[in-house]
Length: 196
Image (tube, rainbow, N blue to C red; front, side, top):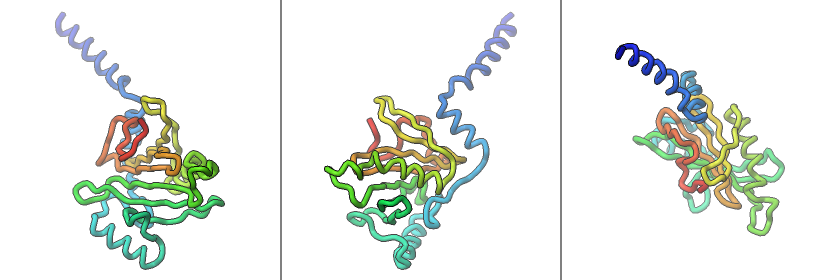
């Protein structure tokens, strides 16, 4: 009798456990199970690139006028001109064990001003999503944080892209390698400024 009970309990547990996964966890599992690696980030920069290689590569990009220094020299910058009104893309990575595992992008219209709603982050967001979709493929799902603030998420193989409105000026994006930074809670992005 005990063996029969144990068998039934074990079967139920095995059957029910997978259904306890959130939609996000299922999505991550599905993408990682494909075994596809998408390591390309921007301008020849990729996941796993060492800090030294990143700096040397950026020096070369700068010499070739492909990037400039961003505000206060804290980021590298390019200008996106494919959407009518130009906007800046500032970027800088996070390193884990001296290798890139997250790339952070900060987009803002060059014409942004607090009084000019036409160039707000909310107006820029559709262009950013379009730019990211064309560059990285996949599609974005709109999700909400526990407090109800929206963010947009795309997962393609090991590469996860999360998009947020940082403030009225900036659309913030983090691109992470899920094989290094797997975070089972998509509503708490590993971005320095996250929606509450």
